[in-house]
Image (cartoon, rainbow, N blue to C red):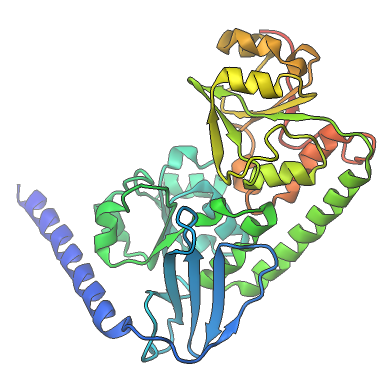
Amino acid sequence: MMCRVNKQFTIYYSLFTYCVVALLTACGGRPSGTGGEEGDTLSLRYAERITIVRHKGYIQVALADPWNLGKTLHSYLLVPADSQIPAGLPEGTVVRTPLKKAVVSTSVHCSLAIRLGGKERIVGVCDPQYIHIPWIEQQLENGGVADCGSGLSPTVEKIIDLEPDAIFLSPFQNSGGYGKVEQLGIPIIETADYMETSPLGRAEWMKFYAMLFGEENVADSLFNAVEKEYVRLKELARQDKQRLSLLMDKQTGSVWYMPGGKSTVGRLISDASVVYPWSSNDDSGSLALPFETVLDKGGDCDVWLFRYNSPHDITYDELLSENQGYSQFKAFRNRQAYGCNTANTSFYEDTPFNPSLLLRDIVSITHPSVSMYGEPKYFKRVKDGI
Protein backbone atom coordinates (compact mmCIF):
# COMPACT_ATOMS: atom_id res chain seq x y z
CA MET A 1 0.00 0.00 0.00
CA MET A 2 2.78 2.40 0.95
CA CYS A 3 4.63 1.72 -2.34
CA ARG A 4 1.52 2.53 -4.35
CA VAL A 5 0.98 5.78 -2.42
CA ASN A 6 4.63 6.79 -2.92
CA LYS A 7 4.39 6.08 -6.64
CA GLN A 8 1.23 8.14 -6.97
CA PHE A 9 2.87 10.98 -5.02
CA THR A 10 5.88 10.84 -7.39
CA ILE A 11 3.66 11.03 -10.45
CA TYR A 12 1.62 13.94 -9.12
CA TYR A 13 4.73 15.77 -7.92
CA SER A 14 6.36 15.32 -11.35
CA LEU A 15 3.21 16.55 -13.06
CA PHE A 16 3.16 19.58 -10.73
CA THR A 17 6.82 20.29 -11.55
CA TYR A 18 6.13 20.17 -15.29
CA CYS A 19 3.16 22.50 -14.93
CA VAL A 20 5.31 25.01 -13.00
CA VAL A 21 7.99 24.84 -15.70
CA ALA A 22 5.34 25.34 -18.37
CA LEU A 23 3.96 28.35 -16.52
CA LEU A 24 7.38 29.91 -16.13
CA THR A 25 8.12 29.28 -19.80
CA ALA A 26 4.83 30.87 -20.81
CA CYS A 27 5.46 33.90 -18.60
CA GLY A 28 9.19 34.42 -19.05
CA GLY A 29 10.25 32.45 -22.13
CA ARG A 30 7.36 32.99 -24.54
CA PRO A 31 6.29 36.62 -24.32
CA SER A 32 4.08 37.88 -27.10
CA GLY A 33 5.59 40.30 -29.52
CA THR A 34 6.09 41.04 -33.16
CA GLY A 35 9.67 39.85 -33.43
CA GLY A 36 10.83 43.17 -34.92
CA GLU A 37 13.77 41.98 -37.02
CA GLU A 38 12.71 40.24 -40.18
CA GLY A 39 15.32 37.48 -40.22
CA ASP A 40 16.46 35.33 -43.13
CA THR A 41 13.84 33.00 -44.63
CA LEU A 42 15.20 29.59 -45.55
CA SER A 43 14.60 28.89 -49.23
CA LEU A 44 12.63 25.64 -49.56
CA ARG A 45 12.35 24.28 -53.08
CA TYR A 46 9.31 22.02 -52.71
CA ALA A 47 7.69 22.21 -49.25
CA GLU A 48 4.63 24.46 -49.19
CA ARG A 49 3.28 23.91 -45.68
CA ILE A 50 6.27 25.01 -43.62
CA THR A 51 8.18 28.30 -43.30
CA ILE A 52 11.57 28.59 -41.59
CA VAL A 53 13.09 31.96 -40.68
CA ARG A 54 16.46 32.46 -38.99
CA HIS A 55 16.62 35.28 -36.45
CA LYS A 56 19.41 36.35 -34.15
CA GLY A 57 19.35 33.88 -31.28
CA TYR A 58 16.53 31.66 -32.53
CA ILE A 59 14.84 30.01 -35.53
CA GLN A 60 11.13 30.58 -36.15
CA VAL A 61 9.20 27.74 -37.76
CA ALA A 62 5.55 28.03 -38.85
CA LEU A 63 3.49 25.02 -39.90
CA ALA A 64 0.56 25.83 -42.17
CA ASP A 65 -2.76 24.27 -41.17
CA PRO A 66 -3.49 21.77 -43.96
CA TRP A 67 -7.21 21.72 -43.11
CA ASN A 68 -7.80 25.46 -42.73
CA LEU A 69 -6.42 27.54 -45.58
CA GLY A 70 -4.48 30.59 -44.48
CA LYS A 71 -4.23 29.55 -40.82
CA THR A 72 -1.24 28.33 -38.82
CA LEU A 73 -1.22 24.88 -37.28
CA HIS A 74 1.71 25.56 -34.94
CA SER A 75 4.58 28.01 -34.49
CA TYR A 76 7.92 27.00 -32.97
CA LEU A 77 10.84 29.04 -31.69
CA LEU A 78 14.02 26.96 -31.73
CA VAL A 79 16.48 28.37 -29.21
CA PRO A 80 19.95 26.85 -28.60
CA ALA A 81 20.03 25.08 -25.24
CA ASP A 82 23.38 26.67 -24.35
CA SER A 83 22.09 30.24 -24.66
CA GLN A 84 19.55 32.39 -22.88
CA ILE A 85 16.06 32.79 -24.30
CA PRO A 86 16.05 36.09 -26.23
CA ALA A 87 13.76 38.85 -24.99
CA GLY A 88 10.74 39.88 -27.03
CA LEU A 89 10.13 36.57 -28.76
CA PRO A 90 7.01 36.32 -30.93
CA GLU A 91 4.21 33.88 -30.10
CA GLY A 92 5.22 30.25 -30.34
CA THR A 93 6.35 27.11 -28.56
CA VAL A 94 9.93 27.40 -27.34
CA VAL A 95 12.04 24.32 -28.12
CA ARG A 96 15.58 24.12 -26.75
CA THR A 97 17.88 22.54 -29.32
CA PRO A 98 19.49 20.20 -29.97
CA LEU A 99 17.09 17.78 -28.35
CA LYS A 100 18.74 15.42 -25.90
CA LYS A 101 15.72 13.19 -25.30
CA ALA A 102 12.66 12.73 -27.52
CA VAL A 103 9.54 10.58 -27.60
CA VAL A 104 8.71 9.69 -31.22
CA SER A 105 5.27 8.32 -32.02
CA THR A 106 5.70 6.90 -35.53
CA SER A 107 7.97 4.45 -37.28
CA VAL A 108 8.44 6.98 -40.09
CA HIS A 109 9.98 9.60 -37.84
CA CYS A 110 11.98 7.07 -35.83
CA SER A 111 13.59 5.98 -39.07
CA LEU A 112 14.33 9.57 -40.09
CA ALA A 113 15.80 10.42 -36.68
CA ILE A 114 18.14 7.45 -37.03
CA ARG A 115 19.17 8.53 -40.55
CA LEU A 116 19.88 12.01 -39.22
CA GLY A 117 22.16 10.59 -36.55
CA GLY A 118 19.76 11.14 -33.68
CA LYS A 119 18.91 7.57 -32.69
CA GLU A 120 20.51 7.89 -29.24
CA ARG A 121 18.07 10.74 -28.52
CA ILE A 122 15.01 8.49 -28.90
CA VAL A 123 13.99 7.53 -25.35
CA GLY A 124 10.39 6.50 -26.01
CA VAL A 125 8.10 5.42 -28.84
CA CYS A 126 4.38 4.91 -29.35
CA ASP A 127 2.66 1.93 -30.96
CA PRO A 128 5.79 -0.26 -30.93
CA GLN A 129 3.88 -3.09 -32.60
CA TYR A 130 4.01 -1.08 -35.82
CA ILE A 131 7.70 -0.23 -35.63
CA HIS A 132 9.87 -2.68 -37.55
CA ILE A 133 13.27 -1.07 -37.03
CA PRO A 134 15.84 -3.53 -35.64
CA TRP A 135 17.60 -0.98 -33.42
CA ILE A 136 14.31 0.23 -31.90
CA GLU A 137 13.10 -3.35 -31.37
CA GLN A 138 16.35 -4.22 -29.61
CA GLN A 139 16.20 -1.12 -27.40
CA LEU A 140 12.59 -1.85 -26.46
CA GLU A 141 13.62 -5.34 -25.43
CA ASN A 142 16.55 -4.26 -23.24
CA GLY A 143 14.85 -1.17 -21.80
CA GLY A 144 16.85 1.46 -23.66
CA VAL A 145 13.67 2.79 -25.27
CA ALA A 146 10.33 2.91 -23.45
CA ASP A 147 6.89 1.91 -24.74
CA CYS A 148 4.74 5.02 -24.32
CA GLY A 149 1.46 3.43 -25.36
CA SER A 150 -0.78 4.58 -28.20
CA GLY A 151 0.14 7.49 -30.41
CA LEU A 152 -3.48 8.68 -30.19
CA SER A 153 -3.37 8.64 -26.38
CA PRO A 154 0.19 8.31 -25.02
CA THR A 155 0.80 7.12 -21.46
CA VAL A 156 1.26 10.34 -19.50
CA GLU A 157 2.95 8.71 -16.48
CA LYS A 158 5.57 7.07 -18.68
CA ILE A 159 6.32 10.35 -20.45
CA ILE A 160 6.69 12.12 -17.11
CA ASP A 161 9.23 9.50 -16.02
CA LEU A 162 11.25 9.96 -19.24
CA GLU A 163 11.37 13.78 -19.00
CA PRO A 164 11.80 14.26 -22.77
CA ASP A 165 12.67 17.59 -24.38
CA ALA A 166 9.96 17.09 -27.02
CA ILE A 167 7.25 14.68 -28.17
CA PHE A 168 6.68 13.99 -31.87
CA LEU A 169 2.96 13.40 -32.56
CA SER A 170 0.90 13.25 -35.75
CA PRO A 171 -1.96 15.77 -36.07
CA PHE A 172 -5.29 14.76 -37.55
CA GLN A 173 -8.26 16.78 -38.73
CA ASN A 174 -10.85 17.32 -35.98
CA SER A 175 -8.81 15.19 -33.54
CA GLY A 176 -9.59 17.47 -30.60
CA GLY A 177 -5.93 17.88 -29.60
CA TYR A 178 -3.58 15.66 -27.61
CA GLY A 179 -5.40 15.38 -24.31
CA LYS A 180 -3.41 15.27 -21.07
CA VAL A 181 -0.08 15.30 -22.92
CA GLU A 182 -0.68 18.97 -23.74
CA GLN A 183 -0.77 19.76 -20.02
CA LEU A 184 2.77 18.52 -19.36
CA GLY A 185 4.55 21.61 -20.65
CA ILE A 186 6.66 19.49 -23.00
CA PRO A 187 6.87 20.83 -26.59
CA ILE A 188 4.74 18.79 -28.99
CA ILE A 189 6.25 18.60 -32.47
CA GLU A 190 3.31 18.19 -34.83
CA THR A 191 4.48 15.97 -37.68
CA ALA A 192 2.17 17.28 -40.40
CA ASP A 193 4.64 16.49 -43.18
CA TYR A 194 2.31 13.79 -44.54
CA MET A 195 -0.09 16.53 -45.69
CA GLU A 196 2.49 18.13 -48.00
CA THR A 197 1.58 18.66 -51.63
CA SER A 198 4.43 16.75 -53.28
CA PRO A 199 6.75 13.83 -52.47
CA LEU A 200 9.86 16.03 -52.46
CA GLY A 201 7.94 18.61 -50.44
CA ARG A 202 7.36 16.07 -47.68
CA ALA A 203 10.96 14.89 -47.88
CA GLU A 204 12.17 18.48 -47.49
CA TRP A 205 10.64 18.61 -44.00
CA MET A 206 13.68 16.62 -42.90
CA LYS A 207 15.47 19.99 -42.77
CA PHE A 208 13.15 21.11 -39.96
CA TYR A 209 13.52 17.86 -38.03
CA ALA A 210 17.29 18.02 -38.47
CA MET A 211 17.31 21.47 -36.82
CA LEU A 212 15.69 19.91 -33.76
CA PHE A 213 18.50 17.36 -33.52
CA GLY A 214 21.28 19.75 -34.51
CA GLU A 215 22.02 17.86 -37.73
CA GLU A 216 21.31 20.40 -40.47
CA ASN A 217 24.32 19.46 -42.59
CA VAL A 218 23.31 15.79 -42.57
CA ALA A 219 19.79 16.70 -43.74
CA ASP A 220 21.09 18.90 -46.54
CA SER A 221 23.27 16.07 -47.82
CA LEU A 222 20.48 13.48 -47.55
CA PHE A 223 17.88 15.66 -49.24
CA ASN A 224 20.18 16.65 -52.12
CA ALA A 225 20.81 12.96 -52.86
CA VAL A 226 17.09 12.14 -52.71
CA GLU A 227 16.20 15.07 -54.97
CA LYS A 228 18.86 14.21 -57.55
CA GLU A 229 17.73 10.59 -57.85
CA TYR A 230 14.04 11.51 -57.90
CA VAL A 231 14.50 14.04 -60.72
CA ARG A 232 16.58 11.54 -62.69
CA LEU A 233 13.92 8.83 -62.40
CA LYS A 234 11.16 11.26 -63.33
CA GLU A 235 13.01 12.25 -66.50
CA LEU A 236 13.74 8.60 -67.31
CA ALA A 237 10.04 7.73 -67.11
CA ARG A 238 9.06 10.78 -69.16
CA GLN A 239 11.24 9.64 -72.04
CA ASP A 240 9.32 6.36 -72.39
CA LYS A 241 6.50 6.63 -74.95
CA GLN A 242 4.56 3.82 -73.26
CA ARG A 243 1.89 5.04 -70.84
CA LEU A 244 0.37 2.28 -68.76
CA SER A 245 -2.54 2.95 -66.41
CA LEU A 246 -2.26 2.31 -62.67
CA LEU A 247 -4.65 1.31 -59.87
CA MET A 248 -3.60 1.75 -56.24
CA ASP A 249 -4.29 -0.22 -53.04
CA LYS A 250 -7.30 -2.42 -52.28
CA GLN A 251 -10.51 -2.47 -50.33
CA THR A 252 -10.38 -2.26 -46.52
CA GLY A 253 -13.66 -3.31 -44.95
CA SER A 254 -16.39 -1.57 -46.94
CA VAL A 255 -14.12 1.24 -48.20
CA TRP A 256 -11.36 1.51 -50.81
CA TYR A 257 -8.91 4.22 -49.78
CA MET A 258 -7.49 5.73 -52.94
CA PRO A 259 -4.67 8.34 -52.97
CA GLY A 260 -6.06 11.73 -53.93
CA GLY A 261 -4.73 13.34 -57.08
CA LYS A 262 -2.88 16.03 -55.10
CA SER A 263 -1.60 13.71 -52.36
CA THR A 264 2.10 12.92 -52.20
CA VAL A 265 1.43 9.43 -53.64
CA GLY A 266 -0.87 10.85 -56.31
CA ARG A 267 1.78 13.38 -57.35
CA LEU A 268 4.44 10.67 -57.35
CA ILE A 269 2.30 8.52 -59.67
CA SER A 270 2.04 11.49 -62.02
CA ASP A 271 5.83 11.93 -61.90
CA ALA A 272 6.16 8.26 -62.90
CA SER A 273 4.44 9.13 -66.22
CA VAL A 274 1.59 6.67 -65.87
CA VAL A 275 -2.14 7.18 -66.33
CA TYR A 276 -3.93 7.49 -62.99
CA PRO A 277 -7.75 7.62 -63.05
CA TRP A 278 -7.86 10.05 -60.12
CA SER A 279 -5.07 12.38 -61.30
CA SER A 280 -7.49 15.30 -61.77
CA ASN A 281 -8.78 15.00 -58.20
CA ASP A 282 -7.77 17.91 -55.95
CA ASP A 283 -7.63 16.05 -52.61
CA SER A 284 -4.27 15.96 -50.81
CA GLY A 285 -5.31 13.00 -48.64
CA SER A 286 -7.04 9.70 -49.36
CA LEU A 287 -10.42 9.23 -51.00
CA ALA A 288 -12.86 6.86 -49.28
CA LEU A 289 -14.57 5.15 -52.22
CA PRO A 290 -17.07 2.31 -52.59
CA PHE A 291 -15.99 -0.74 -54.57
CA GLU A 292 -18.36 0.01 -57.44
CA THR A 293 -16.82 3.46 -58.02
CA VAL A 294 -13.30 2.02 -58.15
CA LEU A 295 -14.36 -0.73 -60.53
CA ASP A 296 -16.13 1.73 -62.81
CA LYS A 297 -13.22 4.16 -62.98
CA GLY A 298 -10.21 1.88 -62.53
CA GLY A 299 -11.38 -1.52 -63.69
CA ASP A 300 -9.42 -1.30 -66.96
CA CYS A 301 -6.09 -0.23 -65.42
CA ASP A 302 -3.08 -2.14 -66.76
CA VAL A 303 -1.24 -2.45 -63.44
CA TRP A 304 -2.45 -2.82 -59.86
CA LEU A 305 -0.22 -1.93 -56.90
CA PHE A 306 -1.40 -2.41 -53.33
CA ARG A 307 -0.05 -2.49 -49.79
CA TYR A 308 -0.98 -5.04 -47.16
CA ASN A 309 0.24 -6.57 -43.91
CA SER A 310 0.49 -10.34 -43.64
CA PRO A 311 2.77 -13.06 -42.20
CA HIS A 312 3.22 -14.34 -45.77
CA ASP A 313 3.04 -13.04 -49.33
CA ILE A 314 -0.50 -12.83 -50.65
CA THR A 315 -1.71 -14.85 -53.67
CA TYR A 316 -4.45 -14.36 -56.27
CA ASP A 317 -6.58 -17.02 -54.57
CA GLU A 318 -6.32 -15.13 -51.28
CA LEU A 319 -7.29 -11.89 -53.00
CA LEU A 320 -10.42 -13.62 -54.31
CA SER A 321 -11.20 -14.96 -50.85
CA GLU A 322 -11.16 -11.35 -49.65
CA ASN A 323 -13.34 -10.07 -52.47
CA GLN A 324 -14.60 -12.02 -55.48
CA GLY A 325 -15.08 -8.70 -57.23
CA TYR A 326 -11.33 -8.35 -57.76
CA SER A 327 -11.64 -10.84 -60.63
CA GLN A 328 -13.39 -8.12 -62.65
CA PHE A 329 -10.26 -5.96 -62.79
CA LYS A 330 -8.13 -6.14 -65.93
CA ALA A 331 -4.86 -6.14 -63.96
CA PHE A 332 -6.10 -9.12 -61.92
CA ARG A 333 -7.12 -11.10 -65.02
CA ASN A 334 -3.83 -10.34 -66.78
CA ARG A 335 -1.80 -11.16 -63.64
CA GLN A 336 -0.37 -7.66 -63.38
CA ALA A 337 -0.95 -7.21 -59.64
CA TYR A 338 1.95 -6.30 -57.33
CA GLY A 339 1.74 -6.34 -53.55
CA CYS A 340 3.92 -4.66 -50.94
CA ASN A 341 3.87 -6.66 -47.70
CA THR A 342 4.60 -4.03 -45.05
CA ALA A 343 5.09 -6.77 -42.45
CA ASN A 344 8.40 -7.86 -43.97
CA THR A 345 9.57 -4.73 -45.81
CA SER A 346 10.68 -1.31 -44.59
CA PHE A 347 8.32 0.50 -46.97
CA TYR A 348 6.82 2.87 -44.39
CA GLU A 349 10.19 3.50 -42.76
CA ASP A 350 12.02 4.25 -46.03
CA THR A 351 9.80 5.92 -48.58
CA PRO A 352 8.15 8.99 -46.94
CA PHE A 353 11.46 10.87 -46.68
CA ASN A 354 13.09 9.09 -49.61
CA PRO A 355 10.32 9.05 -52.26
CA SER A 356 12.83 8.17 -54.97
CA LEU A 357 12.68 4.59 -53.64
CA LEU A 358 8.94 4.35 -54.32
CA LEU A 359 9.32 6.12 -57.67
CA ARG A 360 12.00 3.59 -58.57
CA ASP A 361 9.58 0.72 -57.92
CA ILE A 362 6.78 2.23 -60.00
CA VAL A 363 9.11 3.10 -62.87
CA SER A 364 10.63 -0.39 -62.89
CA ILE A 365 7.12 -1.92 -63.12
CA THR A 366 5.44 0.48 -65.56
CA HIS A 367 8.44 1.38 -67.75
CA PRO A 368 10.45 -1.85 -68.03
CA SER A 369 11.87 -0.85 -71.41
CA VAL A 370 13.77 2.12 -69.97
CA SER A 371 14.32 0.95 -66.42
CA MET A 372 17.67 -0.63 -65.59
CA TYR A 373 16.69 -1.76 -62.10
CA GLY A 374 15.14 -5.15 -62.71
CA GLU A 375 12.85 -6.32 -59.91
CA PRO A 376 11.25 -3.67 -57.68
CA LYS A 377 12.40 -3.36 -54.07
CA TYR A 378 9.06 -3.27 -52.23
CA PHE A 379 6.31 -4.46 -54.59
CA LYS A 380 6.39 -8.13 -55.58
CA ARG A 381 4.41 -9.67 -58.39
CA VAL A 382 1.44 -11.56 -56.91
CA LYS A 383 1.57 -15.31 -57.59
CA ASP A 384 -1.10 -17.92 -58.17
CA GLY A 385 -1.83 -20.51 -55.55
CA ILE A 386 -3.42 -20.71 -52.14
